[in-house]
Image (cartoon, rainbow, N blue to C red; front, side):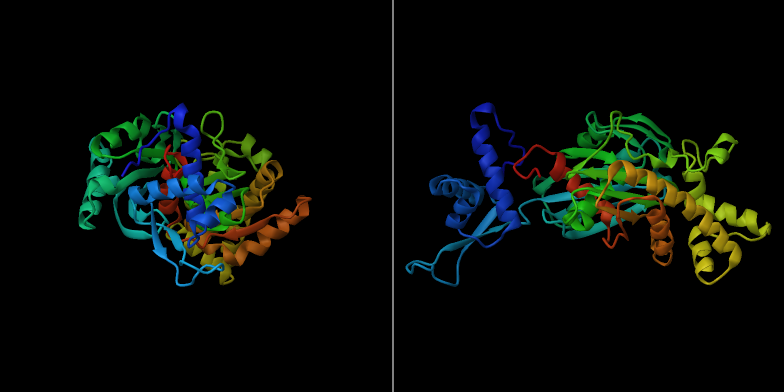
Amino acid sequence: MAIRNVPTDSNLLKHLNKRKVLHYIQRKDGHSRSDIAKALKLSKPTVSNIVDELLEEGWIREKESERASSAGGRKPFQIFFNENAAYIVGIDIGGTLVEMAIMNLAGKIISKTAFSTQKHVGTNFIQSIADYVNTLIEQEGLESSMLFGVGVGVPGITDVDSGIVIDAPSLSWKNIPLQSQLESHLSCPVYIDNDVNVAALGEYWKGAGKKNNNMIMITLGTGIGCGIIINGQLYRGASYAAGEIGYMVTDKDAADKKYEQTFRGYGFLDSHVGGPSIAKRMLQHSQKSEEKWTAKEVFQMAIDGDQLALKTVNDSLSHLSFALINVISIINPEKVVLGGGISKSMNHFLPYLTSNLEKHLPVQTDITITTVEDVSLLGAGYLILKEHESILKV
């Protein structure tokens, strides 16, 4: 199966038509060759030749319809996309865990695994990632030739064109050529991107983005991140740092004073909305040095009516709401999706956020919490389909 077929100028039109036919079959299973030709305004011989090639290469399958055609005679053959023609691997590198999954071309996760980041960070970290990928493939009984590609989400600024991680503080990485190093250990293409961009792609593929080509994904965790999708495409910025809203200032007076960074490289908003900062502010409000809470516990205490916890959460959400107001004013998305660990505690507080936005914004924007399981792993897989120059490129 040719999975790296980059067209030359001489066969570019044929390649584009072939891609168009395959994408149509992906979206609309069960149609005949004649149906496809009519829908795409291509000649029947052109479509028939393309379908024959796709069948030979294994991208599609064909079976006889149960019903005869409306004109009578032979039953037409229905064409279906072969979701298992190849497999993709999505990897989400986090400060705590590295998660990875094998999925088919429709995003159905076949198998997944995880390992501790901090136990492996060091000189052999990239080799360890590759070893886990290869083990996962072997455990599923797949040949390496069936692997279409690997997508990786990284917690830092990444140069997606050169495949270099410019800065990932939680991994102590600076200018690491992750793409080339992983490709040297794996027999397939590798693409990398910022982890929040990858999560946004997952939401675009399997969640809110199915109906919204203009959306933003805000991840709430140790820090605050933002993935931006405009007209169905990721917006990365001139130096791949678009969406770094953790640096956004949401209180001028507080920013003029010295404020404590949560971690090296984290910004003002991170220091007010990130999980560790919420736990720290709760401790400051309570003035009980013997007490320690997680952000999840603080949110639950606020829901249960604890006034100090409620004050801590409301302070944090005030900063978040003003950040959202600023981002929405610039991007004008159809939808804002909240993800990350803290988002799981946010349902109770969505009315508070929404009311703040309505006070200051002339347009209404839907804010929701992601319901997509393994959104980052799916997004890492989808990164391959978005970036790799192939017949499947979306």
